[in-house]
Length: 142
Ligand SMILES: Cc1cc2nc3c(=O)[nH]c(=O)nc-3n(C[C@H](O)[C@H](O)[C@H](O)COP(=O)(O)OP(=O)(O)OC[C@H]3O[C@@H](n4cnc5c(N)ncnc54)[C@H](O)[C@@H]3O)c2cc1C
Image: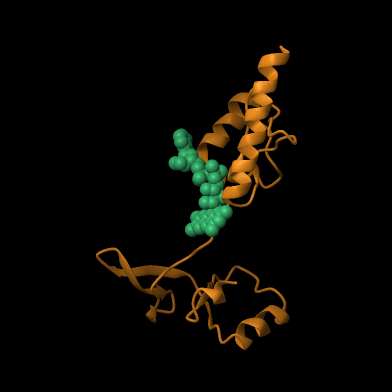
């Protein structure tokens, strides 16, 4: 999909990440997308304009834009809610568990969007609509 935006794609994969099937690797090489293994130790820029990255191999690889997927980590706020309110989270402790209407196991506490495991801005807005509906529903029925 990203190939529709630019023909100059470079993929960087840390050494601890398994590179899927050979099918996936073949797809990348068919599209002429170079894959670099290593940990990026430096993002080189001038006045905040990204110019290149340096992996631990030491070479400088030119890039204009970086798009990365951060490793999943629960936010400190979620950790505190888990400890203080007994908020339920999924097995990886990344996403807050909710029912279909975004209500968590803590009454009156709703979770929407990324933190509830939804994908993207539209899904976050959709979740929020459901949470708002639940809240208004509560007002009229209690
Ligand atoms: C580079 C990039 C590109 C993306 N492109 C797309 C796209 O093209 N289409 C798409 O649908 N989605 C895209 N997304 C995903 C989309 O941005 C998110 O799914 C969406 O913003 C989730 O909304 P949210 O309300 O759950 O979280 P957020 O938008 O992250 O809002 C959470 C807010 O909570 C605040 N916050 C955090 N901790 C605290 C605290 N302790 N106290 C007070 N406030 C706090 C944060 O500052 C932030 O403002 C992209 C994401 C990224 C990173």
